[in-house]
Image (cartoon, rainbow, N blue to C red):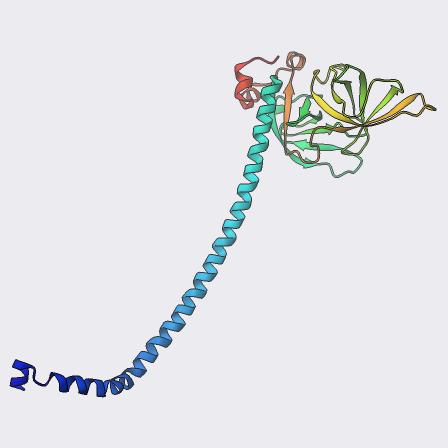
Length: 273
């Protein structure tokens, strides 16, 4: 043993014995190795299941947030369109949100979240980013009712933008249809003509888009042509609306300071035109 310790003469014998005894070492350590493997296997499976449940919850939460982001993105685009529309109008405007829709199939009305506390007045024009929506008919302190131009009881003085032909656009009770009555068969109007507000009647200022002519039927046996038009405003989709103060309305009803503070920056910088 002393000689082997000094000169390693028995190194080969120890190597042979180690190889011969290695199966015995494996057998001796088998219970502990098996126990560790089983413990690690079940622990890993439990961790994977727990992580999988956590990832599923996180994925669901992220999907919900993604839907909210898509909704916010769409809302942001609508607001940008409204602000761009307000810049083009150059009148004093106030953005309101549509909070309810009249469920009566024979009434086309919506409820907005602005009322007398914001300076809203009866008969005030209401627009979306594209065209005229309607006018305010009932006012509460914090909400107002807007009668849409397609309501069967609504009439709006309009003119053909191409030639200035004046007529009245009547609501038909259908959300996508207006009627232009009492136009002679020889009236200069055709499909595709843009109808804009004429300014007559004292409610709507002139020049706002209203509808596009979709059908012109001339019956020689009748004194008047049958003319239909489709509103340019998205009456069944709009979530925001523009309340407009024109020069006449400002003179007859000056909105309070709270309404002025809620107006856009362009409205604050310039007086209503």
